[in-house]
Figure 1: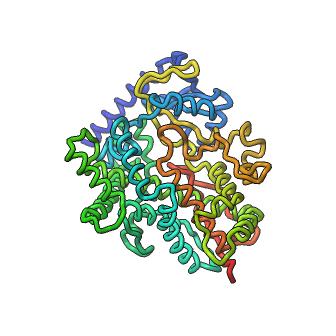
Figure 2: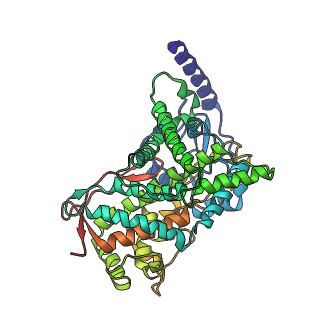
Figure 3: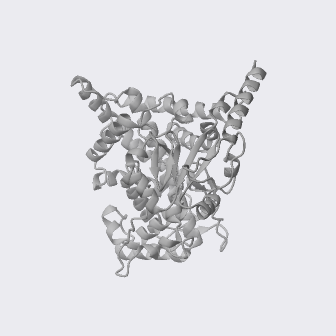
Length: 491
């Protein structure tokens, strides 16, 4: 049976490939950088050096080009002006998300805030923002929750002084704890089995998602025998994470966990049902919403912290300036808090430079067009996939200067010594689908890094030989594992 199924799939792939191979580019589509191959299209070209190829193709093709990925057309948008035109001025044409493997594996399609579209996305985004604002989102109340977690994190780092340490896991567990506090109204000890398991599941899902991404473009591959694209592991991890989150959600139903998103969501759902409102809110919507918050709010923050520390190992002069500024405006007798943010200009600039140069989400998340769209003289067909290349903005020498690939925080400080935030600084993307947690992420990064570099100096494990600036590119660009030596500044 498996052999017959395999041959049937291969025959279908060949038939599709012949069709796409002999179909001509009508001239209305954006240009291809190279001619696509049968079956796979341009997938072969994305196996390695994807970021450098995208930059080269922009030079060769202009700010808009397209790739044939299996049966799907992927349109790549480059440059701040074009991306803003599409995502802001033509937002209704570039806001939807395509159905993906993740939707299938969660068994909760069109739910939550990451991959949902239309009314479901708008309602869940609105409800989430309202609940978070009630918690003090963007204000000192939420910052105090984060500050509490940062204190535990600093204590854990203190136990690692003087020996080579990879802080990545500890950092990710800590940032996961902040999401736990917001979602469930409680934090967990770093040794808590459920928290550790949740953290590992998020990491595994991020890594496996990249491996099975090809199935989004050639869906028939998911029916091949075996587990070539790690779909079984991916589904198992996703379902285990949803099971674990369901346990936490059930514990919040009695309302005794303090302020938390789960309880607020359930109460709002109850109110809307009682009022007979037409709503997309539901139990599955809550489960997917919490799933989305953990996956979006844990990995990205911890990865940015990881990059910041790595850059400090390469630029000890910058690290010294960061500490000197903290020492001048805060001292070492108390913890830096959110009220210090306005005075720590150089630290803020160093954080922004990390976000710019690392560009951890270089292609944001894929979108799709609900209708044919005309832009820059080209027609993007309904159902095409769209990806904005944030690299093309954050690494654009015309915006940032000829030293664009150098780490230089001063580019974010004006002549009067004040923080400068150009509109082209878009690490969180832009438009209606910009990052829901941008405000919280900024607060987290400031509080973690100000406290870390007030208390500690971070050194390479081999003097004068910092770890390489290499990374694994999946959903995000994650530095390869490295050790660091932590030295107390208070001794």
